[in-house]
Amino acid sequence: MDMSVKVNLSPDEQGFTGRECPKCYKYFKVKFGTGLPTSICHCPYCGYTGDHNEFFTKDQIEYAKSMALKEVMDQVIEPELGKLERSFKELERATRGGFIQIKVKTQRSPVRLSLKYYQEKELETYVTCDNCGLEFAIYGVFANCPDCDMLNASVIFRKSIEVAHKRIHLLDSIKDEAELQEAILEDALSGGVSSFDALGKVLQSRYSTIFPEKPKNLFQNLTALSDALSKSVGKSLSDIIGKEDFEFLFKMFQVRHIYEHNMGVIDDDFVRKVPNLGYLKGRKYPLEQDEIEKALTLILETGNKILKIKGDEIE
Image (cartoon, rainbow, N blue to C red):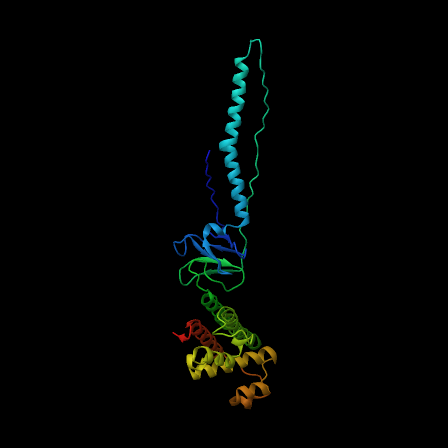
């Protein structure tokens, strides 16, 4: 007898359903009903592509097996055992009063099967794909969309810069706290540079022909990044974003460096790289809100232009 059992997998409280790559075995979640109308799934981590039916998690499979077994027990085995029990009773009645009598005594307890329930895991980053609209969740930060296979770097990068901008908005509530204001501006600038560096690391790992893997902190060293782009796409970073913006961004990256490593005090290395500020040597670089906001905006614009690099051309 052929029998098929349909098992529904319930999403979590946020509407996400767990997936597990059959190749790298890493876990992620998608919200069905968003994104593309497709049965194809791309692993956001290793890029494996296959039908969504290949991406069930181990817990989902165990739950489905227990549900199917219960259904078979309820719909097939229990009724058949009931039929067998009734046939023995009929045989007992048929031989009652005869030379040979058959007496049947049955004692059957219902079989109780425990269902193997599961709970979807919490993940670190929730993303809505800019390209296809799929809502998905991953470990880590950067990954490809499971529907359209586009890298989510631009979404995460933009969100990170937005967070840095929001930090600056806190200044309105602490106008009389100079030290706290400076700490917020320093934190915002550091967050912007760190976001740019994180974007660079994922681009270096995926597109090493354009963004060489060494030096490791390529996106913190704008001169090295500019040289790398000149070699790979024929345009320097100064060509891509403009000489004036490049020089300003270069200065602000150096400002971030002295705040990270020298408490904001301008040293010989800073003066060597930004000689027009040599008169400030030995003094703390004064952080200004307008300058930090401009730097964050430029970091975002620069990152977006770099993300548009295709092959040997810049769109």
